[in-house]
Length: 285
Image (cartoon, rainbow, N blue to C red; front, side, top):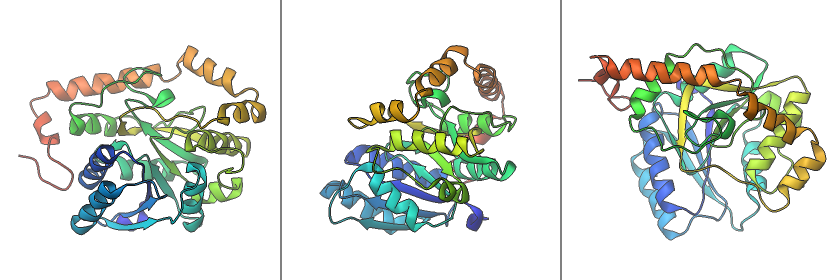
C-alpha cells in the first residue's frame, strides 16, 4: 500500500536540468499517490521554480512544495524537513538523482525485513561504497533502467552492512533517527558529512547501515563535504577514514556486485526481457 511507503524528501538544488531529470524519473518510477515533499532552501532559481510548478500540476504523486525565505546550510535545511516528519520513515533523495522503477517499495521492504536497519542505501552508478558496477568509481547511469531495476529486484535480499549510508538516496527509520538526535547541524554543513556522522552514531547505538541491493538510484556524480566537514569528521571519528579504506581495499560487496552483473546479463539475453521495458504503471507489450 502507498500509505506504508516512506515519505520522499527532495531538497532542491540550483541545477535546473538535473532537477528536471530527477522529477521525471521520480514520476515514472514511483507508485502513484506516494507522499513527496519538495523542500526549496531558497536554492532554486526562476526556471527551477517553473519546472517544479509544471510538475506539480501533472504529477500522480501526493506532492507538496515549500520554499524558505532565506538560505541556510544544506544540513540545517534537511534537518528542518526531517524534524517536521516526526517519527515517520523517510527517504532522502538527492536533487540530481534518477530513481529506477521499484526503488521506493524495495527500500521500504528493506527496512521491514530487519528492525535493526536504521539506514538503507540502494545501489548507484556514483554511490561510493554502494557503487555498481565498480566499487568507488563513477560510472555512466544504466542505459537500460527497467532492465537494471528488474535485475536488482531478483537479487537475494541479504542487506549487507555499509560503513555509512550514502547520500544519493537513503531510507531513514524514523524511530532510529529520533533516538540518535537527528543531524548535527552545528558541526557539519553538508548532507554528505552529516549523514556519515548520523550513520556512525546509529551504528554506535546498535543499529545497522545496510545496502538495499534490490533497488537502484542513478546519479550524475558523487556528493561532497562542505569546508571543514572532513576535519570535523576526523576529529569526532578518528577511526572512520581507516575503516572506509579497509572497506574499499577488501571489497566485501564484490560478490553482490558480480551477482547483479550476472542477473543483468541473463535478463538481457532472455527473449522475455522486453517485458521489463515498460515504465512503472504501464503494461508491457
